[in-house]
Amino acid sequence: MPASPATAEQQRLQEDGLAHAAFAEREAANVPEARAAAPRPIARVAVIGGGTMGAGIAVAALDAGFTVAMVERDADAIARGQANVEKVYDGLIAKGRMAAQDKAATLARFAPATDYGAVRDADLVIEAVFEDLAVKQAVFQALDRVCRPGAVLATNTSYLDIDAIAAATARAQDVIGLHFFSPAHIMKLLEIVVPAKVAPDVVATAFALAQRLRKTPVRAGVCDGFIGNRILAVYRQAADYLMEDGASPYEIDAAVRAFGYPMGPFQVADLAGGDIGWATRKRRRAAVLAAGAPRGRYVEVADRICERGWFGQKTGRGFYLYPNGTRAGQPDPEVLAIVTAERASKGVTPRAFTPEEIMRRYMAAMVNEGAKVVAEGVALRPLDVDATFLAGYGFPRWRGGPMHWADTVGLDKVLADIEAFAQEDALFWQPAPLLRQLVAAGRGFASLNHASSEEIR
Image 1 (cartoon, rainbow, N blue to C red):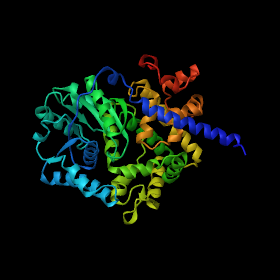
Image 2: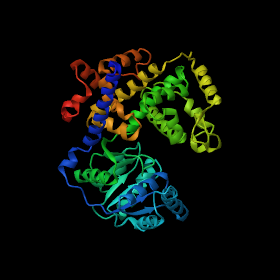
Image 3: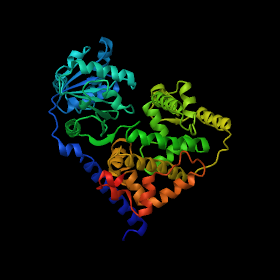
Image 4: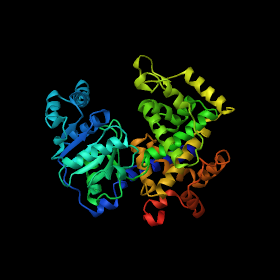
């Protein structure tokens, strides 16, 4: 019996989405610098920092066959860093996926240290310390003193200004961003963040490294959050507004999962650690106030949760409850009480949202910010936004990425939604000029995937 028209259309859309996903991830590695310059040779890698991220990066480099040094501030810290690395391999042994002798052979290429002298001969140094600009600048000043000429100096920052980090050295041409995603030895996305003064061959080296690490590389420009985290901040805001306006965090997460994501935004916040998001919100809020910019609407529910010391899975409680160390969260009546109290304090009369209404706002915020990121050159093309969200943010692969999804829905419909939502909040819902231009011209984001930067901007 032939498939029904609806089923056939759904199948066609899924096939198109999967084809675009493969194209986007492949084409994301096609960047001007990689075409213009040969990569520098890399054999010896050093990682500064032995926490969860630093250890994951070290494991990724070891698995790719590199010799790896790890530097921490003192004996206790480097012992924890070494234990973090060994824990990964012990887990593989316990699962029967690695032999003990293979672990020993791998760790023979690993050198823990408490002195920056250990990086003197490194071809590539990756900094993975605390997300604080002053701390990172101090690390790069130290690296500038000890690293050999021509060594690539990379920062794993998730948000911070890499131009400001590079300025802490006398070799800005050698400094680049390598934004790994946790766990770094598993997650496929590697945002390669290109600061203003970096040499083309350093960018080419980063893309060659990504291939060696079996990562999906995406070129990103410097801004707060680069491609992925910048867009994430905006659609997370949209989710917060939905929560304060009447949808529970659990309804929002359920709608996002039904769309095809493995987790909703509040589950992700609990997994990442609420304290991390809290620190970022405080930093951004201070920057907005210092700049005298319009403050906009600010939802304080997550702050109220963090003030109680509920930071998600690692504390056993966040937006969800995690009894007895379980990773499967349970809805928390006390969180709902916090939400209710915050609505009352803001004078919000809650209203109901259907899953479709939730996703229209969630996706409109994502696509709109994606269009701004492309227009500003932070992403070279819409496909780079798609590759970022497919490889690093759990976007359902069969939908092809947020920009491809918008093309399938129709940019005119997405724009109409944004304009309707702007009647409630004109400051947050500002349609991207590029989105308006494409709708006026009857074009989709796909038309820009082979365009020059001048055509896009």
